[in-house]
Image 1 (cartoon, rainbow, N blue to C red):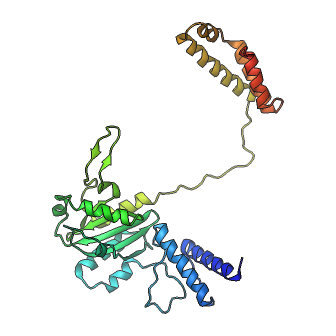
Image 2 (cartoon, rainbow, N blue to C red):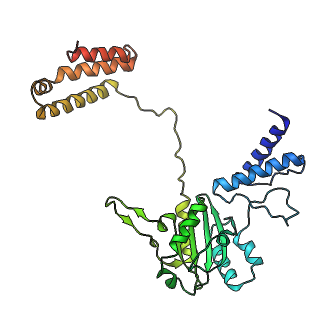
Image 3 (tube, rainbow, N blue to C red):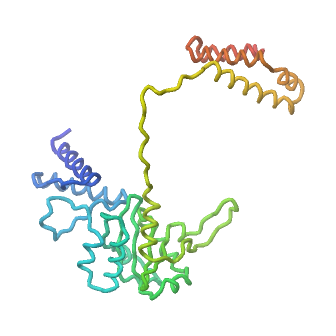
Amino acid sequence: MSETSDQVQDAVARWLEYSELGGRPPDFSDLAPEVRNQVDEIIAMLDQTEGIALRTAYPDDETAAGPSPGRSAAQLLQTASAEPDRDLLYELGAWLPPGTPVDVDGAPSGFSLPGLPVVASWTVGTTGGRVRVWRIDVPAATELERDTSHLVSLDRVFRAFSETAAICLVCGDLNCLLLEPQDCAPVIEVPAGGVTPRRYRRPIQALGEALSAYIRELIPAWEALPRFETGSAHALDVSALAAEAAGGAVGIQKALGVRARYPKKEVLSALGEPEATALAQMAISLYEGRNTAEEVAAQLRKLAGAP
């Protein structure tokens, strides 16, 4: 492996450690220009493929020693000029978990969205994917709910940006409709098997309440791992387990014999304690290593009377 490849791998590893664990951003100033270009390309590719807003670099930030972990709603609030935008960003800052990355979203500009006058848009990065928060020039969410024709356009957005977990349409009253991919495309429901048309599956809710609850759904709450005690393993009674398993297997075959036809009915109905004991002994010998699987198979064929 070349020295350049080693430097690229080391730089990407340092960036991954920083983006996942936090701490001081890595300093790439000592890298040669060609190495730095390769590192930046890999980081940009990771951002696009993972579906998580791990990093957002800004050309006007000349003081940064490396990639920044992204902005927050509070930081965007300081630069927002429109009053509705400030109200929305304030709501996000009040409800989202601290450190949740929020950034400007340029997706709406690349799509024709009839009936959806998107005037401002942001992305909220989570471990489950990006949630796109779009402010719609509609006074109340109840007006937006009456028309589902725009769900076709939103389906194209979900298809184009596969990392999008949900789109949150926010109206002037700061109430919203939160949509997922299955809301915007016809789906086949089970067990009926019928095609369900595009529709809203979530009710109208206040922005902060809806988005924070949805993010809690995306990020599972992990319980603490129980403490593992050494030396507390229970001793297994192999003989009892083998006898129980063998007795159960023989019982199943006898039950099948009730519905079987002759001569199979006669053979299965005759099974009993001797066969169960023989099966248990085979299992014990296999467990103890006195017989191989092939030898046990041969004993089973002999027990069944096969040639």
